Length: 247
Image (cartoon, rainbow, N blue to C red):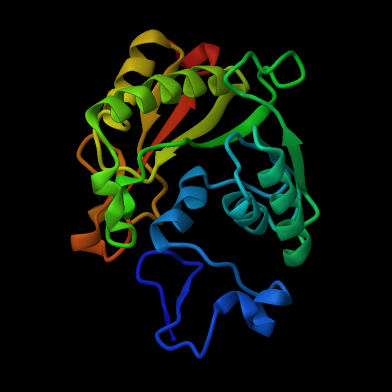
């Protein structure tokens, strides 16, 4: 066993006698299974204890639980997903880990989030559905399934989710858009389109704990299997400008 090279929160199990999820450590909530690049998504948002955070595409809640741990189980993490089955798994996972600040909620965030969400959150993590092409080292069959039309379809959904999620961020708050894709159609192009339509947002550089080899000249977070030994991952940190800082 060794510490992860880039994430401050991970361990690499170099030898295992069986399935990790069958070990006492996992069942007792001492560990969570997550790729190292994926671990850094929560660190990109850099939430503080006591903040109000939205995990807008929470899935089974791995990143939501990591956010809560970084926040020392203080504050609120609204964990939203369209799938009732995934929200059920999220609730069970949070219970296993002893996390009490995650609030699971079934909701379709492709639609207007409503007044209770509008301008309500200090930080938002939006880990959008994507092609998954950054996980080819573990899932090589993806390259036979994904077509250019799929990338276009994903981009339409990603742009819609980002525009809707942005309405829930307070002025001065941070929004992290992330994918496990290496394709610009799902990454840089989505951010460029969003910023062209939302003058009250700007892209800022990731927190200092993110190593510089994972930050592009444009300030995006990007990992590569051949360079970092992780999944291919993309992240953009967006800040909603306050009235005084707008041009």
